[in-house]
Image (cartoon, rainbow, N blue to C red; front, side, top):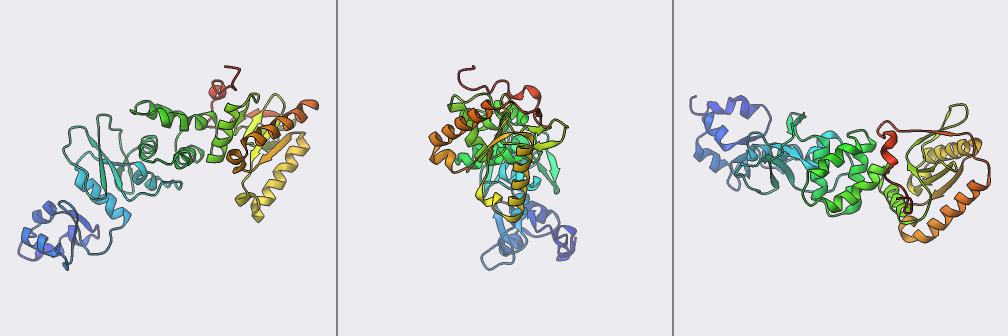
Length: 330
């Protein structure tokens, strides 16, 4: 290629904006030109060792992800938060790093915003927006391992299940393959039990610490005619009792308030006793909350059980709750 013709090469004009120095040299860009353009005041920027941004502005998350994979080399893939962003999850920890999995024998090291993790157990990547990406269960557990905030980890796990990105069992299977998994296992337990939010996980843990009767979580309730009633956060089937963890933020909005009223009307029409609890009280007043649950359960016990039945959510096999029995029944 003649001198200067590289400026019209597709790698330069395609708009990808991130390229390796070796690729630039291969299309005819002199090494001296690469380094000159990457100096302060130049028209390019060296993002990572040997990886060039064809511009001088701050790289986008997409450009960082592309650059990280170029730095990591073949058979690498995005994982953790970087991967989950590409799947569309929202409850993600804030991080400036791009987490990349590479084969165990790869000698590449962390650099800048890139965290390299060598693995002897590389999953088959999924292509998301053109880049190789770890499957959701692996990405969730990898993100969780690097997130110290327990609530953020719970929210991440809960969203991945609640929105149908993976099954709870897939997270458990992935966690079983992970070293130093004890703290994460405790965080995952309420998700395996049916909790689908941080508040529901708090309620689940409070239930486990108490002598409350058997509860199930996020099961669908139907009346005697087979009509849908609700999907309570907690459900005591023996007494047809529903426990709802209702946040002010959602339930006081116009639409949320309307839906809450309609739900409570369906509970009343079906003869179901329901208790509503603010999420904050699960931590600030756990003893009072348990006392309120006991009192509501006693009210439910004093009336004949209504003719209501439960159905399971699609992600919960019928046996999923059998090993989450209350203390005293184990």
